[in-house]
Image (cartoon, rainbow, N blue to C red; front, side):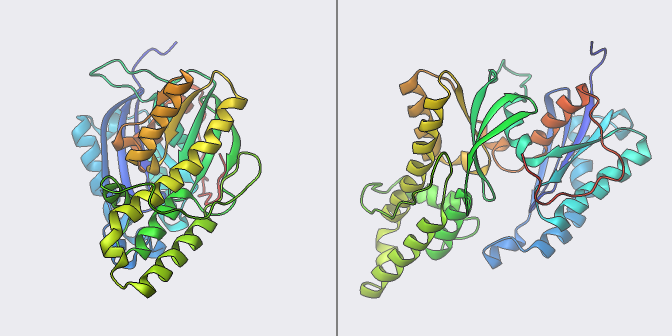
Length: 342
């Protein structure tokens, strides 16, 4: 039986966001994130620059998280950190800091899988109101800039990948299209914004056919590139004149691809509820379509608050809490695993 509250400092630095959170059990006391703006001028994350910015940000971010939580570092029971997947340089900064803190305070070190953490964010609790959490088993559609997966979640650390992208992630498909349209990075939120005012049925794009419950998004990116190129040849102002409709049609195409396969997975696992996770789960149209799908099947939908969609340390804290209860700790020999699997 758990005799006292458990305080965990969680650190997330897998890509270009430096984040620290303080947890009391499954409750979030603070969740501070410093986003790196330097990558906007390059239209994508530059790994070396990301690592350097993590080095600058991690101490101030951790201090801010502890201050907001109202606790001292000496009150911590453990320190948790993302060990993968992610960028090598970025992961190293977080892991090195966490290992040092673990050694200095003589508290356990907890390694957390970034992809598992996105799913376990659904188990974060809210002190202000009672929140429903998924019951096992459930299906989670995990969508981000680096991953697209359908996962059957049987327990806090029991995951079965039902299907995944065989090439590019859906988040990358959003960002690459935005870059072609001349929109700022990251482009997914801009496509979502302009799509709200557009006709989602006006344009169509090529469909990729993949077996089983897998996804493919490399073909749609190529189709979109040629679509824009060919129309701009005849009308240099085509994008400017039709931006809302282009964004709405493209977003609808990607959403259709995700939900068509998800519906098949739900058919194969009757009775399972559906959860969303990952950065793309912030997309307004995807959230709307998931609610429509689950309502039509009379099952529950679990959609994370916007602050827990993108990379953040609170989700790492969720994974760390359940690992703490299992005494699942790591040694100071912990190394990054850039290709860590679910």
